[in-house]
Amino acid sequence: MMKCDVIRDLIPMYMDKTASAETEEAVREHLKSCRECKGFFDSWKAYETKEAGSENKKKLERAAEVSGADIAELEYKFASLSSKLKKRRLRNLLIAIAVAVSVLTYVTIDIVNTLKRKDKR
Image (tube, rainbow, N blue to C red):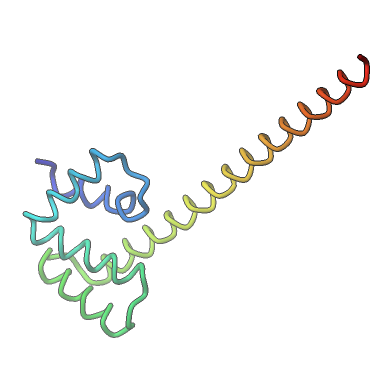
């Protein structure tokens, strides 16, 4: 079974659906059996999805109470994780665009070359 610190580090990837199937399964299993990490996960999820503002604060307070962490520390970690996720999503989008442009360029060049060969015959 993984340590809580490792699970908490993996939660952003788990939420972003960028973790491997094995990692996702390990996180799911750990969350079933660990109340503190489940509270952390629920609070992070509530913060990330921006449900009702006062409800987020209550969930963060509960997570801080359960885990023994300071509420300011949790808010800082959540903000940091949110920022990292936004950067990761932007990076992934830019990579997808670059791949699409590359494929489109290759297909266009291939079509042009095929047409040139047909004209020479």
